[in-house]
Image (tube, rainbow, N blue to C red; front, side):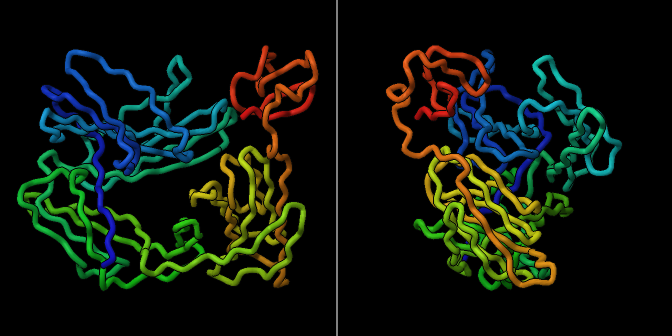
Length: 385
């Protein structure tokens, strides 16, 4: 039986915090990675949150408070945007089609925003944010959808797959339930599977082997106690319709000539890299390039025909090439190069010249390379592991 997990999220709630003794914090829909701890209504709690694994863009931070029996009694959320460090930015945001407003920085240089959604009607809304440089040029634009729900919860839900208007399933709940607390397996047997295409696929590593599958659209309808409803949608991957990825092996500094991928199809390549390497991928035909880490995590997508990356893990990196324009030819060249290798660098303190000056990557001279990373020793880059 094909199943997947449904979780619908809340935003903009302000609830009572009296009597709780546990908190749970998580980003986006990563409830399985929730950070837990104790909390007291009379004591302030400060947390330093690690966002290093989050991709650039708009995210939500969720805070749930639970009572002594473990039941969640209140939920709050906040929207934030992760950007590159050391950028001079100006930001503007808006909800739906409302007038854009400027974000102002705090003394720390960070942006902080508490969204007031009290005037919004119940249902699906979109939070938009644009990032501008000092000259007012657009650097990036991001958006995130959220659902404003009544505090009383929902009494029924239905779900629809791939545009089919007949509900594939649903359930009437025993009592009104807050949507994010609705965690259940949904049966999607009998759904018309979406075809695998270059603009609608999911890549992952299964038992060490690369696999690709199509994404399916699923729409939820949440009914309130007065029989009105709101809707939300997302995507899921069909595990039973997966297929193995056949990837062409790339060797460093060796040009590989191959056929231009046909419309809606994907050409796959793989290249081995050591953690700490600086690598380069290029494709001669204008195309979309998508790079995945050895564990299947998407690292980068570009239409520029070139990807440069500093690798964090050792293993096979997978490159997807699609939507290619052969400019009248059916051949393209794919090139991979390990520009700078960090392999076989172990104890650099034993290899550096006596009294050689040591600098970190910020240009600051240090007595010894006490931290892991790249250092400049005797005028050469070396890696501390």
